[in-house]
Image 1: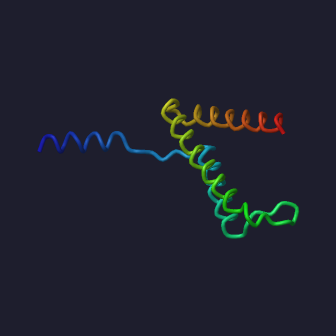
Image 2: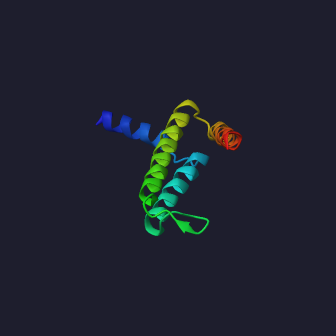
Length: 103
């Protein structure tokens, strides 16, 4: 009985909070984009990629999984939500800058 009371007190004092972060939005965007490509196919400048649509969709699914894992890693390192947002937005900015430099 005493163990149940202790367990209940721990659960009451430490509720699990769901925190939204920028990489959550990026993961959702990748999965939505992959679903859109699966349904409608991939088209660039009006010409469809008939044989590559499935491959492109699977690449976006892979991106979504990788970004989701990165989000979990960042959550383990940064417990405060404000710091998490700053670090994840900085990471997204860095990735975009590298993407545009390579392009």
